[in-house]
Amino acid sequence: MSVKTYIHLTMSHQYPLPDVFQDDDVRYPESLVEHFLEQYTQKGDVVFDPFAGYGTTLFTAERMGRVPFGVERDQDRVNFARSKLSNPENIIQGDSRLLANMSLPEIDFSITSPPYMTKENHPQYPFAGYKITGEGYNAYLQDIRNVYQQLRTHMKPTGKVILEVANLKVENQVTTLAWDIGKEISQVLRFDGEVIVCWDKYGFGYDHSYCLVFSVQ
Image (cartoon, rainbow, N blue to C red; front, side, top):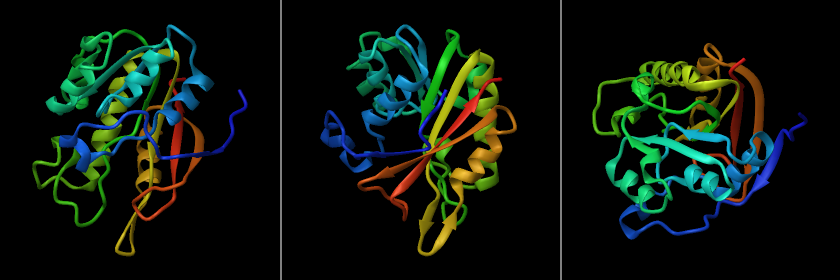
């Protein structure tokens, strides 16, 4: 399959979040999900997001005739997503580091943007909802790899996985987050390459991010 290695997208959303979430709107746009679902999936395929957030992947997959499933640790976000899904039970409140213990159908395709962490000066740990300290960047990367090692067991042999992630520049210090995550997940899935996403507006010191593409086999 021939896939463009860069795309241009607008950071806009089809619906606003409630006021209570406005200060924590870290969603990618529906157009990103649409682009890759059109490339890699068909109607009826199971689409999974291990860090489902406010449900953008799930809403978009459902609208496009796919079967969405996701995991999100924050109960308020889960409640919001459930209020908009035709099958609200398809988003599970839980910790994606425990995917091996979850009951999921065979997955055709997964897309997400993981919680970000800088290498330095980031005391709150993403996989604990940024509510505890003491875990470092290396532990974060190991947890990312562990999530995808477990996800692999739920996926079809023909399955594809995409992570949208950026490198982070904060006060002239750069965390090569995208490259570090790519290296970790490459230990458990086959790395197929990346698609550079050029945004009209973005954060983290850059105007682009990377969609890292992996295969189960």
